[in-house]
Amino acid sequence: MSQPLHPLPMRFHAVNEAAPGPKWLAHYRAALPGYRRWFDSEGEVRRPSLEHCQQALQTHMPELLPLWQSLAALAQADENDARLLSFYCPAAQPTGCSQAVWTRYTPTLVRNYDYTPAYCEARILHTCWHGRRVIASTDCLWGVLDGMNENGLCVSLAFGGQDTVGTGFAMPIVLRYILEFCTHVDEAVKVLKRVPVHMAYNITLLDAYGQVRTVELDPLSAPKITYMPLAVNHQGEFTLTNYAMFSQSYERQQFLQARLFDPLSSLESFVNAFEFSPIFASNYAQGFGTLYTAIYNPQLRAMEYRWPNRLRMYQSFAYFEECELWADLA
Image 1: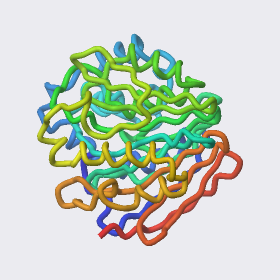
Image 2: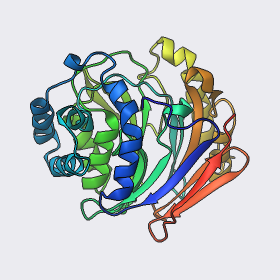
Image 3: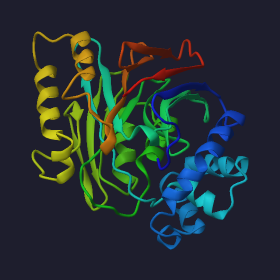
Image 4: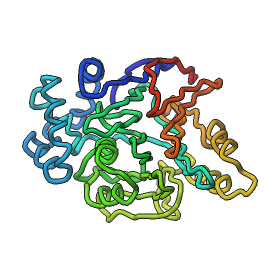
């Protein structure tokens, strides 16, 4: 995300478009100038050639290649914009986020997305691009920040806190690939183990069978697969980084662990905790404010999105309603 798409208060859209068409194209055209500035921020020569981008997709996510080609054709993208749309080896884009899975009785993935308000796409998109329906919060024009597919597989990303940048894809494109082509957690883990990413990310997964994994990714290290039902903005037991300290990553981790394993906690009280400090962040001026809370219930194939002042949006695969709402984050 790379430009002020809208000032505060923020407008969030729920969009239903089974195949890429006029709604996706309108969003692409509105967001493209900012993405171009971000993509070229380190100089155009720092980005891979179109041939390298296509080859990377063919090698690592071949099932996604026709979609990338069709999106580029729909957008009438020139060579530079087609490279951008691959999101292969883009500029770094650290975000915050806290995410955790409530595992008792009704497994539920809960996450706060923390970032600069001006750079959030603020779109919840319902699609059926490969014969499998997906509802997801979008980023990178066609990627996924968090979401669920019709099989009940849920995904969510958090920045891993490391400054390392390497050769690979932006994580939202990999999460799109997972929701388009995976059914359960084990399949998603296999994808994360083989597809390279360009930054450090922590990915939390939940499926309809109650399987939970958190995968720590770093472009220079092998993926670390854990059964820990939460992730924040550091990796390992204790990795002292400036971002982890700035974002209170360790404090948030301890808070979530205490709530997850508190025998007196309920799903309702656990979800409500995401609306308060230290999980809810309000440092918007420095790029670390909570933009929304997402709650994914794979058994019901339903999700809820929350904002301050008890603002709510409910969606499901049984009934998805296009709408827009304004959230006051100030």
